[in-house]
Length: 443
Image (cartoon, rainbow, N blue to C red; front, side):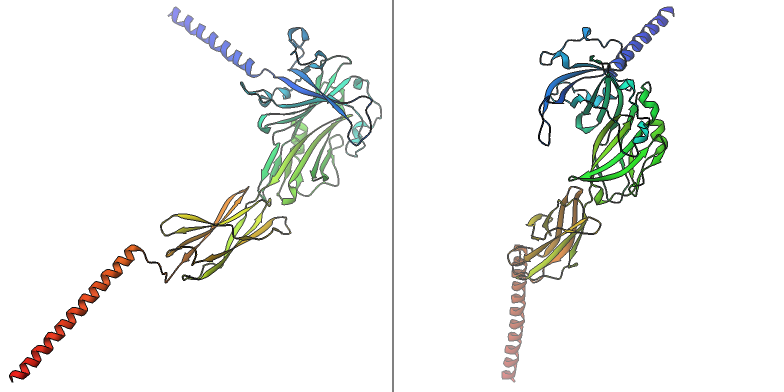
């Protein structure tokens, strides 16, 4: 009995150690290869300043223990001055999407650059720096990092502070989104994810925060919603139907934006920006409203067709977005086989007041050139990013001039039967007349 209990204890200890090792391995933070981007010194002029790119390496940890350079071996293609030992207590930079899959040559996207802190003049941000005094805390080296995980699972923007002339920055503010690219149906509610974390030990976190959502499309943009977390006020220019969960914003750092009813005009890029005094971090999200078309065929039902007749049929596709659409026709005969009939004559796009599009195709079907048999089903096909849609109508052909082999054999059989009946009737009548004449002669 004692030996059995000892075995159980050994197994329990082994299992515990194994689970602990797995947990430690899964929670380890990745080593991130980044591009260090900065403006060239002494190079001015032009609309876009010249920049340089150098390879850099970020060693990520959730605390300051064991992050020293002595325990690390720098890759030969990375200069030691571009190796950083980052402390991220929130473990935002430890997300699994930032770890390169084993055997993969692809890497997560990562850029790091110097960050210039400054007060903001925006009316929903200005209260954060109303004292006008720049704290001593800002006298350090500041960096910003922008990262995107594999398959667009996550996008991160972080602001980091390192004591002057050190390579050991601490994450002060991180803004993240799990909805890098979103597709939504027309008229449905849309959630654009945005969350933030700020270091509670930083003196900047005690002065409050502000959140701003902006919309951009083809170089034009506008403010969607802005909130001053210090005075608990919303900007007057808030867009109708846009909302934040203010309780979750303060308690959990959930700055996600809800659009109550998706419209075509909502398609575009959305920028979520979180402000601290003198600092900001932002992430960009892409929203596309995708609505498949509604189809209708005119005339419906189709009139009866005869060989040699030309049928004119129109298919109308309406209420779709975006405008990418392919229209075509198909015919399915009585034998169950389908054949393409081409796109017909396709019109240009027309846009409705709600921003959706419509388009039509016209088919001229010459029954003397297309073998339709006894008829079948005519189908309009619309291929759209929102899905493929079909509309069908029956087509009947009468008086067709090309009978099948079976029909020809049947007609020959009928002709032979009729010929036999005629011969029988005529023979019977002839025999009756001869007998009658013979009888008359005898009398």
